[in-house]
Length: 114
Image 1 (cartoon, rainbow, N blue to C red):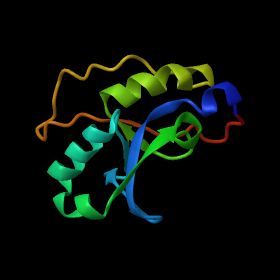
Image 2 (cartoon, rainbow, N blue to C red):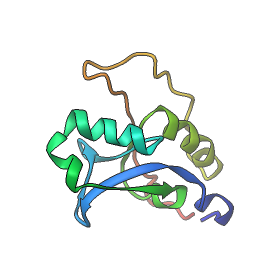
Image 3 (cartoon, rainbow, N blue to C red):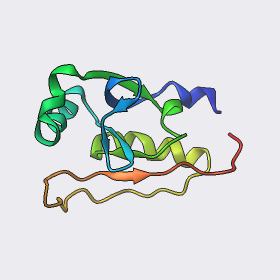
């Protein structure tokens, strides 16, 4: 991996145990701020809010599995991902979904050496 970008903070993720990560479908949610994550949990999974830990996540941690990025975290992620072989573009976040949340799900590149 490119050590110069591995440690760049992309956003925040949340978990209630090592095997219970806050996800949207099969992709772990990455929010741009800790408050955005709290707001997401409060609206989508209110029973999880009290027992959830929120931590910063770095670029090197989010390229090996599917992740669901909000606008701020995606805008931090995609330029770095393109440096290592992804072909991502700017995303239009103005079109809200019926839930009011818009995530871009990125899946890892398979069979690729970084």
